[in-house]
Length: 301
Image (cartoon, rainbow, N blue to C red; front, side, top):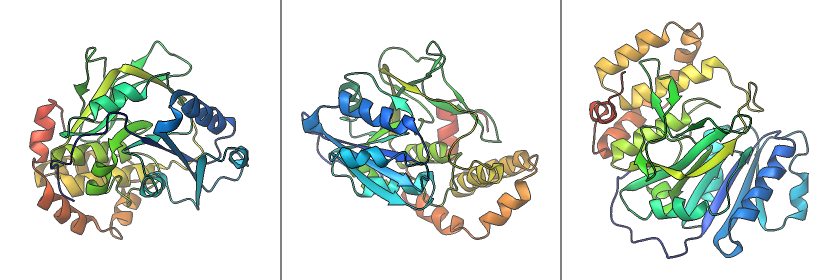
């Protein structure tokens, strides 16, 4: 898991592979795919849909869309489904997208331009709710030792660093994906995937940037097609802390997460994980430590 090194600039017109993961998204999937095909030039695009165990026939329309590659998995979860799609990507840039987003015309230009600096690991746009477009978040930040995240306000008009980027519409050069391994495959279902990836990339020496010029609509829902259990959420926060944090910060996280009823079950899940070998791998490759990361953004944890 090496950090940044010179890899050569992106082509003038880089190709973009959009990886959309889906599970029982109904009509949202078709609307999202249509939006991507309409806003990304034909000669610069590859679209991969990873159907992670849908039962609602929402992917049936793709039989009539030969330019979209469909991969099927059996409920492997968000992190592994995103990685599955990325491993089959051929574009210069990989864009991970939820199956319920709408991007504006021309989004790919500013996104790809922000990735031309080889110190940049990933970029994301501003994200607003389809129901309340006036409210837009520009990256996220950790708000305390329970590792909860909240949206940040607009940082200005030019690309700006953010501690956590949302995975609902996140781009990275394919070479960065290859070198870092993308999402942590041992994260469980929903919750914490984005925070872990962003933290790891920062520690490896890659910047994470928000591109305020681009604003993408996202459907925020109270219930999701993916199972979302607090045990998995707490597990993912624990895994992030065990892998990346110092002993003192890990102890603060453990103390905070003990307040959740699902804490014992989440800790039991940790016993079957490769957390200590993963920690050794990351520590051997990173350029910064977690103290640097939290001080960089004046975050409390």
